[in-house]
Each structure stands twice: as structure tokens, then as C-alpha cells.
Image (tube, rainbow, N blue to C red):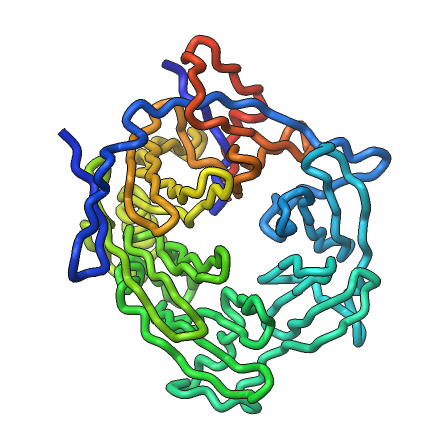
Length: 403
């Protein structure tokens, strides 16, 4: 059976999950036991304009209704507003790069807020901007002006890492840490009172064990598995590539709930240790190969139509040579809306995890570059379509962007 190759951006059965002290029986068995899907590709019409895809769609977000997709172009500091229902570019919204209303160029956060306002975040400059381009609220975090309980010297600069604004816009939540050591903590910062605290998240410490640092007279490189920080319906979810564990965080009550799962189609996390510090590029590549050929888990995806969470995992195949694209064994896990594990399966039809994916109207949309035009592979889960009826992907979809 020929596998579908999609872009990679630089993922008797009893199912149970638990909070560390008590397991929850999935009860209904494996909902993905007879998993199947169909896939089609749609392409956005840019009209007379150009949608710059040189950096993919990393700096993008959806509005709450998921009818519009907003893609930031750092080259022009412009937001491309795209109708997902009509599959066309409907507007280009310009912003200034420099000056009092400047958004900067290298953004770590692009979020769409209510009223078509935008949160742009970076190390030096973070704020909320109106559609007309005015900076209407400065959210730049200055450690010297904040009273953060537990903040150690040297990590204040990282307070903007993975920044999220609370639904009532009263707090900033982020994942600061020690860049050299790879540690992560959860920060909760009250914007009005200029104070906050750091919360330990030891359930994700496994990722630190798979951080590789090359430091020599000639070079410095760092490899690290991703840490994911997401918000769905007012609850925050923290996860990491090296483990299947997930934290649920309620910022109003400061409650953390760690969920751990017992997967059967993959290990529950990386198992083979790596050397954390190396002194040569050869050692760095060898240890990195050891890390990436173990299981890695992606962030959660929420299907609000069917009230399910999904999470992809992958085990990358060993490197053949510099010219041969890397492929992976791909796996999918399903959870109910309370994050109880209800299904798991391997997906032999896929050679890579769907890139920059999100659910809309009960279907999974995944970014694809179609002849330098913005496209999406749209997956319909649970389809009765047989393998022979599935549409073969185009040559452009077969390209793997290993970034």
C-alpha cells in the first residue's frame, strides 16, 4: 500500500488514563479500532495578490468560529485574512514594522483576539493591536518591573516564551526556563498588579533528558523536543514531545491535573537515554539520531463538532542518506472531552504527521504547499472510503519539508 507523504514542520485492548493515583477505564473499547479516512486537497485563491509561504504558516491563527485563517507575513508585516469557507484571500491587513505601533519582524506569537484584534509577541515587544494597526495595549514583559515569586536570576528574559493571554485578558501565562539547561516552568502573571509566580511542571521533565547541547570552539547547536502550551475552552493544556503525559491547568484556581496514559501501539515516552552534552558535530548528529528515532508526540487537536481530542505520535525511520527524505511510522490517539483515552491506532497510510493541523467542521485540515500556493489537505475521519478509492496525493503533497 502506498503511503501518503505530508509535510513535516520542525511529529483484546483495554485503554485507560489516570491522574497519577487512579486510572480511568475507557469502557467503550478502542474507537479507532476500525479507523479509516479519506483526504482531499483544497487550494486558496489569492486573487491578484501573493501569499508568502517562505516560512510556511507558523505565524498564523484561526478566529473563534474557524471561518477565517490569519497568516502573518514577516517580510511585509501584513496579515493575510483568508476565508476557509470560500477558500480565498479576502483581505490583507498592514502593520508597521518599526515605531510606536511597530510589531517587529521576528514574532514568537500571533493570536487573533475578539473584535478582530491581534496579539503580536516577541522577546522585545508584545502588545495588542487594532485592525487599523494601532498598538492599543502594551504587554511587553519587563522582569525588573515585575514581582514574580520563584523567578531566578537569568531567566527573566524568557518570560515571553510560549506566551498566552487569559480569556479575560487579565493574566499572561507562559513557559519560561533556563535556555542552557532546557528547563521549563509555568508562569502566571497578573497584568494589572504586575506580580505573579512560577509553577513547577515536573511531569514534563522527560523532555529535558532529550535535550542535546553541542558546544565547542567552532560551533554551538541545541536539539530539543518541543513543549506544547494550548488553550481550549478556558482550560490550558501542557504537553511535551518526549512523553504522553498532559497537564490540565485552571488558571483561576491554580489547579494542575497531570494525566498519564497507557498506550499499547507506542511506548508511553522516549526510553533510550542520550548524551546531553557533546563536543563535536559527529557526536551531536549521532545523539540527535538516537533521540528522533524514538517516539515523539504532537500537540493536542480538538474536534469541537464531535467533542473529541486527538493527538498524533510518530517514530521516525533511521536516516538513509542526505538526499533521501525522512519518513515515519505515524500513530493517532483519541480522547473524550474530559481527556480520557478512548482509542489508538497506527496509520500505515501516512509517512509523516499532518503539518500545522486543526479541526474545522469535524474534519482535520493540514497545511500543504501546492506549487507555492496555500493549500490544505482535508482529512475526513471515519469515512467508509476504501483504500482504492482514496485520492492519490499530488507531486507537491509528496514533498517533505523537514524544517
